[in-house]
Length: 234
View 1 (tube, rainbow, N blue to C red):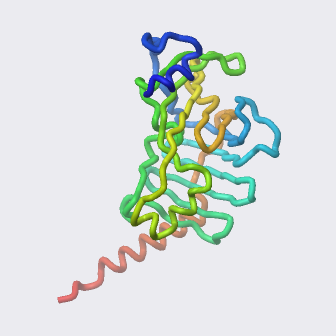
View 2: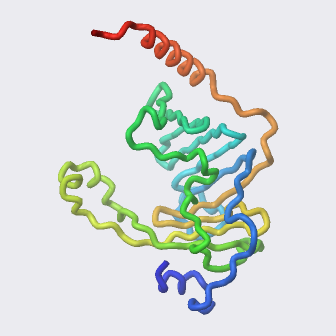
């Protein structure tokens, strides 16, 4: 991490003497939990006015199954179900789920080992200090990362961009505040917005894949068996 970023995050601490990281995990990995993440343009660890909200995401995790529902300010909705390394996506503009797995796509990101997927960059060397957020002492992690500047997203789709890679990425800080007692995230900032975490009670009912996905998987299994029985062409 750059010295400038450390100076911004250390709140007057001597950057040459990095603070000691308290013992324990950097981030909790609950087997069963539910929470909501509110993404907004407000730089505050509290959920503010609705006009500033960019996206709201609700997450439920139980064992190997994960369910996400998100909706942005434009009304676009995304549903994601995960079971192990297989992920199933459905948007508000589609009428069925799509499968994403390491066996079906060439570019695949395995999120099965991450509970809080947006915080997979946390490392011991990224720890910069302790700060109270809403009266709770938090471990603070920060680093500089490469982000595409606002207004450049469309250029990614242009053929000349792919060929010449002419756009420039901006180096921005991202900062995460982790509750020191529970090791659950409270607040996160990056170049896209500010994220506030609100945790609910541990879910009681078992989390199961919806019938639509189960039916789709059975059809896929039946088709695979049928194809395997066909004689090989000479």
